[in-house]
Image 1 (cartoon, rainbow, N blue to C red):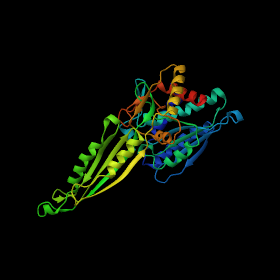
Image 2: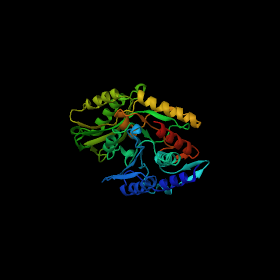
Image 3: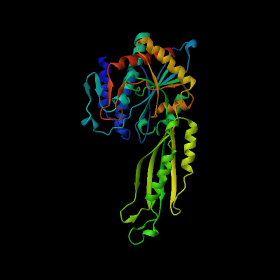
Image 4: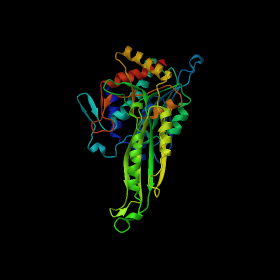
Length: 372
């Protein structure tokens, strides 16, 4: 394990960066931008109001006519799901060849691997053989609302996208497909009444919501990879009041675009069981499915071959979670995800990375950049 690589990973993890804390994320942007500047990258901070700044870094490649090509996009994020102060209960620590800490796996170690891949190429080759564009977003963990337009605009100008999100499983598999991810909000408005004096004059939004949820449960089709999860419900004010309002927040996952359209139609067609209740349905798909196209498969095949040269076997998987790679894949740009750290426990108290894997994952990234 390279000492500089470990030191930078520690520094980044100890700089907590929850998605909704702009000042905290911006502090990490400053640290990371300085590291890329040391490598000669041209920095641009896309200023944001509600979230941290989006960090864009450009590296020129060989300018000879024969080698003029579109840049590769190296994609990742700097925000985490952990609140400020989490280090108090999850301190950065080494144990048994692993490094623990909030956000180390998802995905600060991946950013470090990206940096060291570029550094290695510069040291070995003298300069980069092709232009690179690095984009690190501040809000991936909460849907990429601020960064999405920037990601899609820049990705459209690139030849391929390498995503440094965590690898999958203990074998460090790449992700060649991801489910599409969406959120729906179902609001029910009923008719309030005193539960003792005027019970029959009321129409309970809570009971209506319960009936709707039994219908929504039928939308799940595990055999097709379609899941619908009402994760949060709220409603009512007091036990002696027939509830006037209730709402549910629902997570949806789909494997294919057609399933996404079908699911959306089902939500829009919901009708109240109680004619005195009214439904309002908002939301939809946030990230389209990342499907394993021929171009994605070819990109993975290249990575697998390079990994074999380095000395390890690189598997591929399809996963249920989404990333900014969904956005670039949906544009038809060849995208390979899961090139980041090997470890476990994303978003959990035992989040960690396997330190010995960092150098060879960084070496794989360097070879991909060099040979694509």
